[in-house]
Image (cartoon, rainbow, N blue to C red; front, side, top):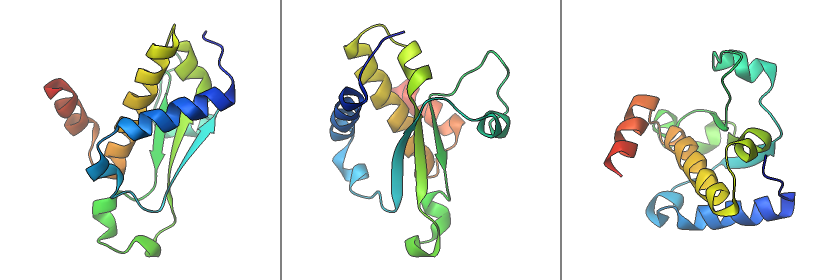
Length: 126
């Protein structure tokens, strides 16, 4: 597992966010991005993960299209990035940055209302 200080993770996350399309990032409102070491048991059950499966990130909240323009009528959405599984999935800082960018992009896609099938379709076009 790659060992990285939290401060370096925060810098890499900020860099990854800066590399995501500005036109989409500017539309993000009422969304927190937080770190956790591992998914909780409740989160694992929510996502119906098998014991050998892991989770790198999780969007929790009401997707933007369902809010119908009423951002303040809903609690903030939250993207949790799971430090330990992410660090286990990479072998270098460049890989880490790429993984953070991909995971963040994936969870932001959920914020914008895309499901896993739509996300996979977009990823295949890249």
